[in-house]
Image (cartoon, rainbow, N blue to C red; front, side):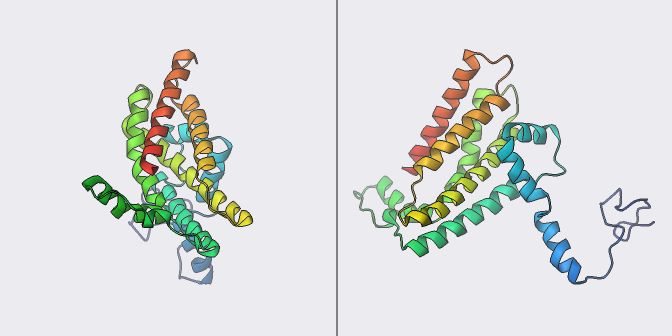
Length: 236
């Protein structure tokens, strides 16, 4: 048949040139309720499939994605944006429900150039802490690339840390929801510890060249230490 989108002649369910469906008809209720959400989020496999795979076997999943196994996966940038937005939304709801206040917004600092700048940006990054994690991706990718540049290039390190940052947002969602049961302030420390442990596991499996030895373990540990210092310094 002839594709109604690009005019290519093809056989099968989809056009081999542009991917247009062979069965595109009038827009119906089924299209609005299923096909449109599917095309945006791939909710039947893409988003939740990527989420599950990154929890079950993160290193193997990311390695497969870098090797070209991308058809079933959500795009890394879209993935981190969706989860960051969801994490921010959940945090906003939980803070509103618990009546928690923004401590950094009212902090008093000595009036000098640096502290005035910190005081001006602290309220924003307290309310939208996920923006900070997003901005950290190219920075920590530079660190991991410096330690493990023989395995992947810098842009591949960006993809690795984008996926891992997205998973960290899932941990934050769980932490915020869990804080409802304690009706207390949300503690970031346990989430950061779990995040750094997951980084060590994934980096060890993904970046270290075989055979595993003390040098590769030491290099991974040094990379995690530097990444941790950057996060803690930035959050401070």
